[in-house]
Image (cartoon, rainbow, N blue to C red; front, side, top):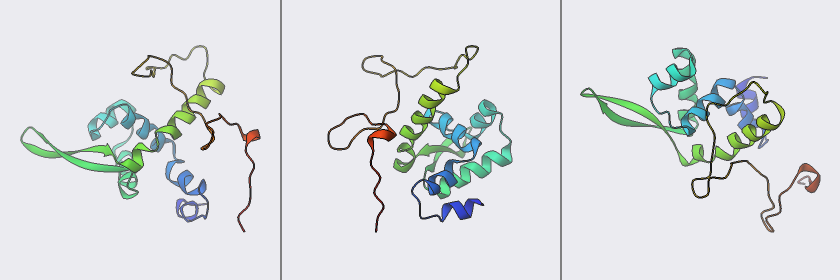
Length: 149
């Protein structure tokens, strides 16, 4: 199934999967949340080809996840990439993937190049799913699914 096919699905999981499902897109978003903003910095940090990087940045711009912001460099106007509100709302998605990956896919030899800590208290960071009314933390077993008519 092509990107366009997924993107047009009447499914609130299928459409985001179409946007985020390619591995470079998720790694690019990780770098943006870590503070990378400039094309050259993405390319050198990620060792991604210029054409793939251009394609992924264009897609995120077109989807309204990123915006281009001008800056001056050596007397020339250049652009950096910043998250929009739509893009910032992807933070819990990336954190959920990281939380899952730490639990199920990390190895003893692996040493992540960075840690995440709460600025206020220094505690660790993880994603969780909670009830919008009572705040209880939920798993799939705690949720009842009702089909819409």
